[in-house]
Image 1 (tube, rainbow over the protein chains, first blue to last red):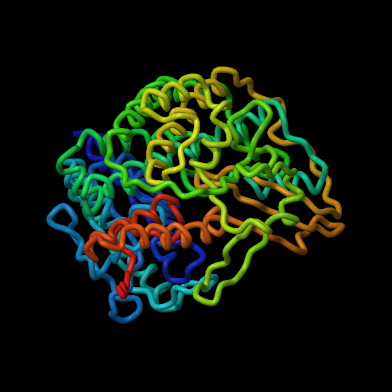
Image 2 (tube, each protein chain N blue to C red):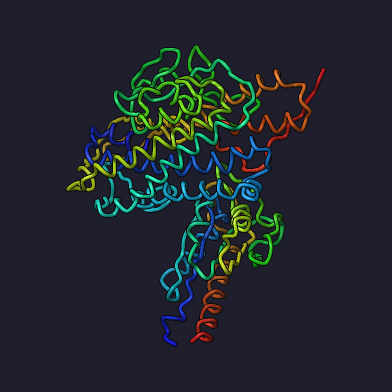
Length: 163
Length: 358
């Protein structure tokens, strides 16, 4: 078996708004990862409507979505969901989009259409500051660093197993 | 786009030829991605009795697949020209940072021709939906260009006879702050509320639609005037046809310009810009100092321009439908708001209606 054949086609999607404090957590995560991505892994930022990602993830073996959430947990708390196995709990990724369709709805839309990727993992980072123009809070920034390190480790372990 | 137009106006720069065509193409992409999303995933559930697009997908998967395909081609145009699918970053004062070779655009042609056909089908399908009887006596406001369906530029005209240059906008329109709301509401002086967006563009510019878009509208039973805001779903379909048709033409006629932007020399000045965003006219004004730094800015987005009209529609609609059960009235009032695709309507239920019947 060649190394080429074992490369996982992986898409990492960061969701958020750069101008709303901790809401930018998903964007910060994909920016942290860039420059040190395994072969076959690409990133994408979603700053508005998410409906386009159903088309974007076609052909990928594995999709990772990272978004901020506001569930009442402590700032920086990390949630992980296997979205192929079941719906992302609404109380975590609440839907209140503008003229757009949000992540949780897009995942359910794709499930209904039979267009989920083989693997879809959603990470949600608990935010605390969402006001206009605010920077990402310290706790969330640490959580982003920690998740970036965790993902690199996981991918490296998987890659070692496959090779 | 309104912002760069306003800056170019302040600096005395004219962007024309292929650079202007590329900007028009970029806007076509934005219209396609925005209208496809709103027509199928946000507006259609209202008419079909579904809570959301997920329920439509269960019963009519082909319809939702069509929406996603349409949206994808819009996204691709914006990504190719704008650098990314939402909030483009490649546009600059004077033109673009980088312009595509024709070979980067021609691969879009086949799918745009499919999208044009799919949009004609969208109009046909939207016309079969059930529409409440509701035709307020609107003042429509939109841009009007001598020979194009308005997208990038034109004079500001209205159905009551207003016909002004963009720089005269603030002599005729102002924003007010109502006690009951935290949103600014734009008002036409001595007239009141007004309606911007697809319905306004259509009513003021039917004669500027391409033959294929006009034909799609007529086949759907529309005349050149449509006052029912619920039927904006059909009109958005007509504008999808227009945007796809226009995009095909722009790509076919495109030749790569020798420079990505015309030279820009910063200096003091004041500039005005107004374009037709998918939801209606978007006005920008900037004052620049000698270094070209913005010292004063005014932006009036379409949602602010429609805000007063949305409130007026709600009052009128509730008064004439007060006999409906509370739940149905709430739902239809949400539709009244969603007709405008404003920046305040969620994809799911958002309206709290407190009804006091006397």
